[in-house]
Image (cartoon, rainbow, N blue to C red; front, side, top):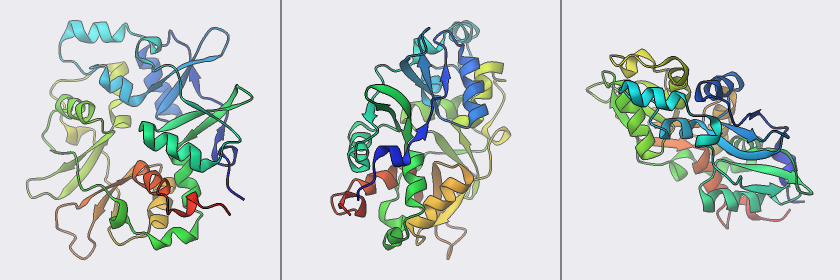
Length: 271
C-alpha cells in the first residue's frame, strides 16, 4: 500500500508571531535546528512562512549602518512568503514529491480537513529513504549536482552571504589555493549575525564548520543515512580513491527527492 503524507510528516508546527524581529526568528531557527518557521496570526492560524534563505535574501548583512538599522526594524511578516503551499495528510507521498519538485519547494504545510496539523519537508523524505534498502541500486554519482559554490578561506563573510543569496544556495564550500576542502559556511552559521551584527573584517574561515563528504560510489541509502544522522542537507561528493582531488560535486536532499519523483522510481509504484 502506498505511503501517505501523514506517514512521513512531522506533527505540530514551530511558529513565530508576525511581529517577531529577524533576530528573534534567527534564534528560533537555531534553537530548533530548522530552516523555516510558520508565521501565525493573532489567533494562531498559519499566515505565512519565513526561512533562513528569506533572512539572507533581505540583505541583512549590509555593511552600511543605515541599511543594517533598517533591516533590524523589519519583522517576520515583512519577509515571510504567503500563502503557504499545503497538502492534505491523506495525499500519497508521490503526489507531495511532485509538488515539491515542480515548485522547487523544501516543505509543505500538512492539513487534515483544512486544519493545519504538521509539516512535511525534504528531510522527512530523506529519513524515509534511509530505511529503504531497495534504494541501494542508485549511487551518489547518479544524482549529484556537478556545480559547487566555492570560496577561499580569506573571503569576507559579507561576500559569501551575498553569493549564497544570489545563487539561492544554503551553503558555500571553503577551499584553499589548491582546491583542498577547508570547511563549509551554511545559513545556520550566518544566523547569529542577524541578531548580533557583523564585524566587517570577519572572513569565512572564522565561522566555517567542518565539511561532511561522501564517496561518489556510495549508495543513496548511505547518503540519506549520513544526512539524517548528522542533520545535514548537503554532502560534498569526493572520490575516496583520489582524496587530494578537487571535490566532484554536491548531493542535497533535493537531489534525492527529485530522484524519487522520477516515473521509474520505486516511490512512484503502487505496492
